[in-house]
Every structure is written in C-alpha cells, then in structure tokens.
Image 1 (cartoon, helix red, strand yellow):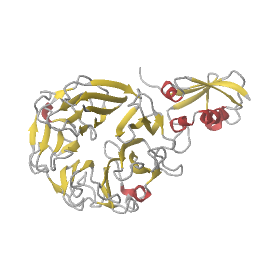
Image 2 (cartoon, chains in turn blue, green; image 1 turned 120 degrees about the horizontal axis):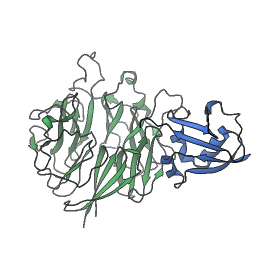
Image 3 (cartoon, chains in turn cyan, purple; image 1 turned 180 degrees about the horizontal axis):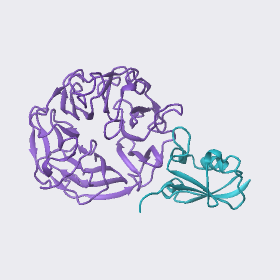
Image 4 (cartoon, chains in turn brown, cyan; image 1 turned 120 degrees about the vertical axis):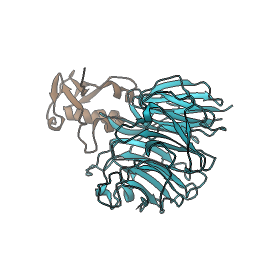
Amino acid sequence: MATVTVRLPGLLSRFTEGDRQVILDAETVEDCFDRLLEAVPALEPHLFDGDGDLRAHLRVVHNGEPVDLATSEAQHIEAGDTVTILQAVSGG
Amino acid sequence: MSRVLLLAGTRKGAFVLESDADRGGWTVHGPHLAGWKVADLYYDRPTDRLYGAVGHFVYGSTVQWSDDLGKNWEQAAESPAYPEESDRELNQVWTIVPSPHDPDTLYAGVDEAGLFVSRDRGDTWSAVSGLNDHGTRDQWFPGKGGLCLHSILVDPDDPDRMWVGISAVGVFRTVDGGDTWTLQNDGLELVDQDLAEGPVGSCVHRVVLDPTDPERLFQQNHRGVFRSADGADSWERIDEGLPSTFGFPMVVHPSDPGTLYTVPLESDERRMAIDGRPAVYRSSDAGTSWERIVTGLPGRAWLTVLRQAMAVDTLDPVGVYVGTTGGDVYASNDAGDSWAPIDCRLPRIFSLNAVVLE
C-alpha cells in the first residue's frame, strides 16, 4: 500500500471542499479510484457513466503517462506517485 | 414585507435574483454552481430548500440541493439513473417538480426521456417504469433539443393523476399513480407530416395546467398552441391571433382562470423573435384571443426564449418573467402590461422560476 496523490479537475473540487488533490493509500491505479470513491462517494456519477465506464471526456494520467483505466488493474503505484484525472479540452 | 426570488438556471450556473414586492429593482446573487449547467431550479417552501437539476457535458447530471439559497450544495445519494444494463443514457436531469399531495415526493424528468420519482425529498430516486418502458418506447425519437421529458403536471385534486410532456413524442397521462400511462395526442399534429400516422411523434414543447381547473391544460407544440378542456383526452388549436405557431414557453396565471402567456418565435428553422421584434402574447380567455404586448421590450432583438425560461409569481398584480438564450431577463410587475429589463446579463438561460417569500 502506497500513499499517493490524486489530482482532480477544478469543477470536481466542490466535492472535496475546494481541494484539487486527495491523498490516499492504494496499490494500483484501479485501486486508487476505489479508494477515492470510498473517500468521496459524490464523485462517482461524475467520473463514471451509466455503464460504469470512465466518462468519455476524462483521461487518467499516472506520473505523466496516460493510463487506460480498463486495463490498469495491475498497474502498481509507488509511494509519492501522482494520479491525475484530466478533463478533455478543445479549442483555443 | 414580501420578497421575490427569481431563480435562473443557466448554462454556467444558478443565479438568484431578489427583489421586494414592488419588483422594481433586483439584486443578483451568484453564480452558484459556477461552471455547471443548471437546467431547472425548484424552491421547496416547506423546507426552504433549493433543488437543482445540475449537469455538465463531461461530468453527467445529478440532483443537488442547497439549504442556503445556493451558496452550498449537497448531492443526492442516488440521483436518477438508468440501470447499467439499459441502453439508455441519462444525459441531463431536465426538471424537478414536487407532488402537491406528499411533501416527501418529488418527480424528475430527464433526457433521454424518462420519469423518476423520489419518496425521500430527493435523496434517492427510482424509475417510473410504466412510462419509461411504455409500449411505444421504441418509436420515441428526439426533437432538436433532445429526447427529453420536460413537463410534469400533477393533478392538485387527485394524486394518482399526472401528465408528462416528452419531445418529440407527445403527452402521456396516468390515472393510477404512474403504474400505467396512455398517450394523449388526440387533436395534435405530428411534428413531421411525412411521418406514418401513429400514436407518437407530436413535438410538445411545453405543457401547463390551469391551477384552478385540472381538466384544462395548455401546450405550446412544435405545430401550434393547443388547449384541452377534458384532461388531455382531446386537444383543440388556439393559435388564431398569434403571429406564429412556433415557440417554446407557456405559463398560466396562478389565480386568474384562463390567463396565459407565451412568446411566439419565428419558424422551426429560425427560432427567434419574429422579425426581430420581441413580443409577449397574453390571453385572458384561455387562448381564444391574444393580445400583443411590446411595452418595455427591446425594439429590435433576435432573441430566443427556451421552454422553461418563463415564469409567473403569485403577487397581485402578478409578476411575469422572461429569460433569453442571450442571458437577458425581462420582468413585468403589472401582469404583463409592461416590461423592463433586469440589470444583468446571465449565461444562456434554461429556466426561470419565481418564488414569493413572506
């Protein structure tokens, strides 16, 4: 179990009293999301769609590298890692 | 002294516009939920709670509420949602409507079209499957604004009787508390005349109920303005005297039977004030005749008013309010005789609701 930082998009920080990051203990990237939703259940409908998939316009980045959440089960994380949830942007 | 709250749901948050009973000057509070789409707001008088139909194209849609008029919000434990095995997507909670018979019961209309009910003041929601899985469901198709359930009416005298409006499907009615529903489109035209004749396909834009007579309903439809005198068993056209059959909003005077307001727009293709000259139309005889009102409205403006962006309050004389997609709000404190802009320009306005507090 490693202590990691999860960074949230700005609009979702209203569910964490304004904090853009959540510190939690997890073993894998997928586990990280489980722990995040345990800590902040209100995030679930905003991160995952009705099929339980990560919403289409969100991306997950682990220490700067894109991660496919559907295949991240075994992607271990180390103490001090950062998992970032990015909102897709477009335009200028 | 009364104070009036005008609740504005917009593309980028909720705004609360506040005035005294004269309704001559307004203070603007907000944006609350800044950055989030707020399709509708409902103020629950018994609990002083403000409910929001909140969404975002990235983050989905939920029901939320505020106990301090919008400053802080709490999210429903279980917002309306289609089951995971369903092929339907809940894109937006579109409207939130209370039951006049039970203070714990709220209804929500959503896109993709469906009706949900909460029996615990909005904390958890369940699907009204008698409607959502109606036998005509595979024939439902969207209007330009989506396949949405936007109008929910509950008979004030009979908790088992309700109506809903779905675009572009029609009006449904239940008389058994929501277990079974019948399509009530008799007298309406189909949105597309090339459609095969069938029960669905009438693009109802807004349905309202005369608060003094639950047999009388009115609707602005894609194909005209209609009235029912028999609880939606049948509809008759009442748009003679209007400059256009097209438009979205419609509101009914809360205590003066047969007085209603609408904002006709120019054609399906253009959807803006006719000839760039905005006007509110008022009927005092349940739609048999209409009066054009332009006093105080802009002389030249190609504005658009969406289906829920018109409201009435409950003062005497009644206040009437119109919000535009350009973010302007026009208010009348004399039952619609004259209008004045409220000093603000909001994001695109989806809904207005007026509340009078003592």
